[in-house]
Image 1 (cartoon, rainbow, N blue to C red):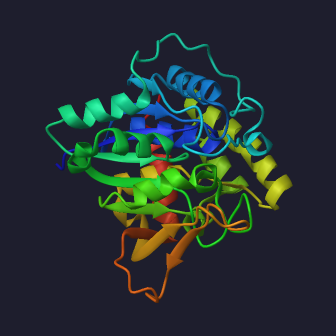
Image 2 (cartoon, one colour):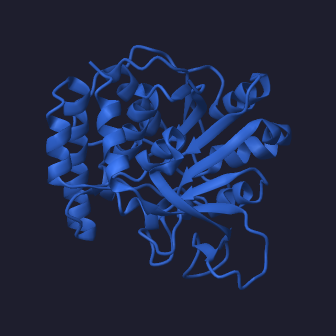
Image 3 (tube, helix red, strand yellow):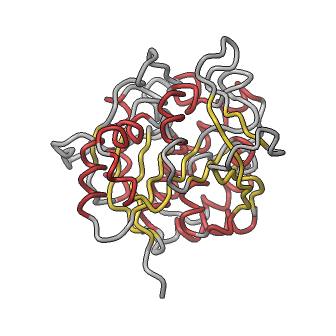
Length: 310
C-alpha cells in the first residue's frame, strides 16, 4: 500500500474550505499534518475560528496555526457577500475547545518542513500570503516541498472580470509562489466551475446521514443560495475540495504544463493569471494548470471520504 501523502492545508474557511478540510482529514491517502489559516474569505480572526469550529465538529485533531492578517502590499479584501459575515454563515457550529499553536502559520510551515524526513505538499486554498512569507523568510524549505497545489486563478475572473478572488486578494504573494521553482498545480476557475454541487449531489450527501454529512449539506445549501444570487449558478462550486481531491488521486482531473504569471500592476487586470496556452512567449512552463474534471471520480471520491466519518 502506498504511503499517505503528507499535506499542510492553508485555508480561509469559507464553505468550500471547510469541505476541503473535512476531505483532507478523513481520506486514508492523505496525512494532514497541520492546518494554517490566512485572511481571505473573512478576517484572520474569523477564518481561524471557523477552522477550529470545523475541526471541533468533526473530531479532527491536528495542529492549527493562525497566519497572515492582511496581504503583503495591498489593503485587505474579504468575501462576506459570498460566505456571510462570519465567513461560514449557515450551519450552527460548536465552540472550539482546542487552543491554537503558539507559533504563527509561517513559522509552523517553516518548522514542519524543516524537521520532516519526507517532503510535504502545501495545499493553499486561500490567498497565498502565508506561503509567500514562508518562502521569503526561509528559502531552504523549497527543497522540502513536494508540490504546491493551490486553488486560484483561471482564464477568467469571479471577483473582477480578469481576476479570481484568491489571486486578487494578494497577487504579489501569488507571483512569489509561481516564481519559487517547486512543482506547482493551479486549480483555477476553469476546473472548479465544473465541480458544481447540484441539488442531486446534495441529496446524495444527505443520505450518508451523520452529523458531518448534515453539516456539509447545510454548508452547500447556504453556498448554493449565494452563488445563485450573485452568479446565477444552480448549485455551489466546491472550489477548494478539488485541490484535496487531486492530492488523493491525481487522475481526478487533467492538467496542461504552461507558463503562468500574475498581473500586479494593471488598472483593470490586477490579479489576473496570465496563462500562455499556446506558448507565444516562449518562456519555460512553470505550472500544471487544471483543465478537465472527471465528474464520476470526483464525486465518488467525495462521497466515499465523507462515509469515513461517524
